[in-house]
Image (tube, rainbow, N blue to C red; front, side, top):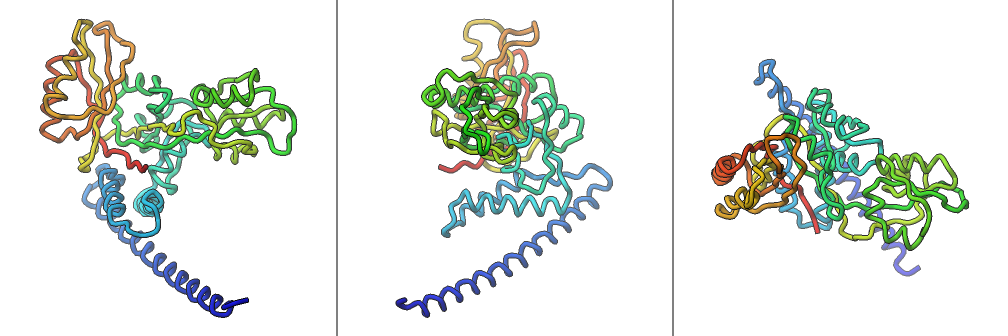
Length: 369
């Protein structure tokens, strides 16, 4: 073989260099972890027995933004973010372990979002319902919670919005992930599919593919995509629309991947907590506004945003739960509650509405093309 000896020698040199780099990385990781532990000890001494906040989302996101801005290597920014989120997660756990409630069961997209945001060094606790996630956070049985709030093709998750109307829980962060659905079938089974399980939103998001490939096959709604995978695993003639991870958990075969009708299908999740988050420099604020049932009510509360040049991210309307008003609007906009311009807008909206509640200000999600 031509130049085989030279190539073998170069290969060994490269492998040796990689081994040396790995040793240096390991040394620096442990050095970082030791500093994180010392930071936790200092926080506890300063707190003097009071509650200590170990999770600082505004600091974490700024660390990630700075690292990404400095990235000029072969790794794409998203891969760099994922690596450093895991490093931050492991070091944070060295300060204090965290419990994160999410809409379960195991294998849901909500769990994927929670682990993407907090990293793998947390205890993730699956909950049966969105209400259960809120309850675990409000009772302080979990430090934070993660629930879906909006899908790019199917719209808002009404139950999440409704729950905010009767709680003091704050929005502490947002997570956006691309949703990729798989068609999952039992392993080693050639039995024709007689029923398909999926969450109602997944059925809607994959309607065209299902109509083309499985016309006339009954579609049964499940409480989650992971639950759909579990149900499909119990029958050789069943299938599920769910995530790849759910298929792996319940021993199903990935018969097709990427079956969603919209390629850019994404879901936004919110992080639930009890504290207001300091500004990070690139933030979003969520509020709930109630208005009278009269012409021009919506225009009246939106006008201050235009006057003060504040960009709106979304506006959603929910049925009123109180006889005092007819409309309740959930509004997301750019900016932090500590900013003077945002405070001015909040005050003006307050004067034009029946009531206003600030759900929280938090760092915008990192999103890559």
